[in-house]
Image 1 (cartoon, rainbow, N blue to C red):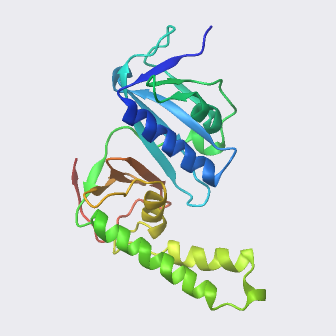
Image 2 (tube, helix red, strand yellow):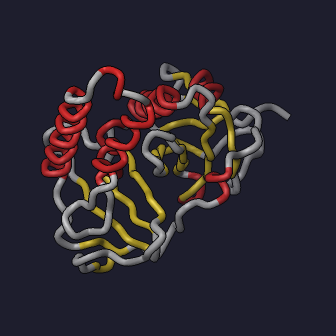
Image 3 (cartoon, rainbow, N blue to C red):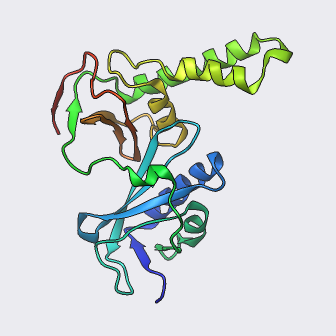
Length: 229
């Protein structure tokens, strides 16, 4: 049977998918992604996990029409991110789904598709970008203060964990969620908007370009209240 071909809504969708996959591969050259058909075959959700951030990254791709070669709405497969990137044809607006690979552990535990509620009083996109910029400046400053012999991977990781594990306001959400959104290109542009959604122990920082999802050990949301989406 021929490999399934996906027809994306436009060239911009194909370019954004390629950029997303390229960013994942920047952090992990052997990255895998899980693909799930959604919205009756009109959208494809692409899940990845950049190891530097310990979060799930999600890019939704609008499809022009259902897949070819007899593939139906049940498409759900884990594939190589590199092979998927190679198959993106921006000019033709198509993506060929490569063969399945053995999925990493995270691919077996994805966030729910429904039941999300919006958290109130979460910082906006501008504030989140400023927070990340300040954290990056602090990290570089603290590393620069270390003696050369003290700049070991263990020490750099310790400083990074301390900074990126801090809570955003009273939300119970670590700064690394916003850092991942910035680094993956989800919080770009002055007009970008972002909101925080909650479903049980899961939180999702959503923007027009993608989402960063984290499953926390506790389902609490600090001082934030939530309302239906």
